[in-house]
Image 1 (cartoon, rainbow, N blue to C red):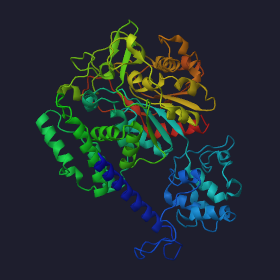
Image 2: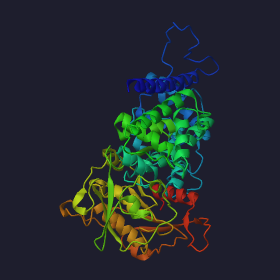
Image 3: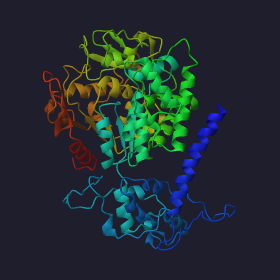
Image 4: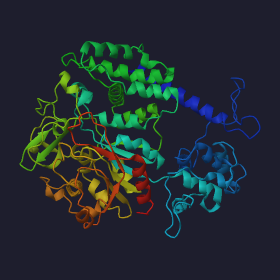
Length: 569
């Protein structure tokens, strides 16, 4: 264990040192040698560290904003008016790179967050942000117009998105056109696919949805970044246990072709946690692990979680390894290292145990997590037989319980509530309504936090087609389901329930124009919720007998979100 810790620390330190040295070499004076040079004798002491973090938390965040980095270099003008009276602030700015940029060069590339005044043409106005947020900044009174324009380009709205690990993935990456300041809140109750096998043998929360979102947000700008993403998204053979195990051993031993293009620091870090995961698996000889269809990313994630004994630490490491923007955050709705089971109560009183059985049941579904090969193959293109009754509510069960009397009440991740309190917008994403969205909403404190945000836009994205969970429901039923979840309605402990109207939780409903889900716009708008239909596109389906499925066109969705958040809609 100590050896592995040492290897991980060394690998991460070597990465940080290399990045810091590279950053320092770019921050020299214009037309002259770099200010910080490591070309001296190895015994010579450098005048200053190669990289010195910005003292201002706000400027530090801006240095990684959504705008191109060359535009952010405006903050480093050595002769800028904003820093004449403060030498330390000027020195911090020079650490970003000393380039002087004209104000006309600071217009951002659309579509960025661009609130326009009510009396002007939005198509011609320079995108701006509410600059009152900078009033507390120590240099706010001396900010030049050029720096102000650059900050407007860099800061986007802060969003909190409740979603699952599949449907919203197609939009998650495109959100960077609007902002990178997004907190993705995801459930940890997925019990299908390779996640089920990890939970069966090693326990702990399900990480499949979190891993899926991290991969979707990961960096693909370089050959190495693409190689890392390819490795962590790789799945072992679906049908043959022996073939899957052979592939896995090649990966663990560092001999698989997937390691090509990955440098030693990255390889040593990733492989270290894969080896740790493998060592945990072989400690359970009575529970033979089924590698079929196993996700290498899930194995890495599980190894990191077990090693650190912290889900948050595992997410942080995974985010850094996969190159997620620092201001983007992936959060589990519950911060736990224990196994959680989702339950659903139908209107007829039936209790269904397990997320996979609720949404995509296998042919022999019993509600138990099985260790057979079939448990690692989840067909999300097939909804299975229709439910006998409408879902009344979802809740959490103890890992050993099978009835609603075994209901448990896990605490919401504190960071979720913190992010809600400072968000410019809250989004309920597309996806499985009762198994992807509602598990995060039923937690105590979430309804209170969202209802308290009177100044925040709350946007619900309607699915383009029904599934097993929502068959027979219209858009109004979707609205009421979200409201019931946030109010914790039908709870066996009514003293913890809320009674807020839908307008407290939802201000806008966005629907694909070709959705097959009925949208009674007049009834929804009577509740104080604005309904907007957006341009959509049909999904290709090889089975012509099935009903056509549609999704939002990404550009139309991003534009509408920008308009809503800027107050234009």
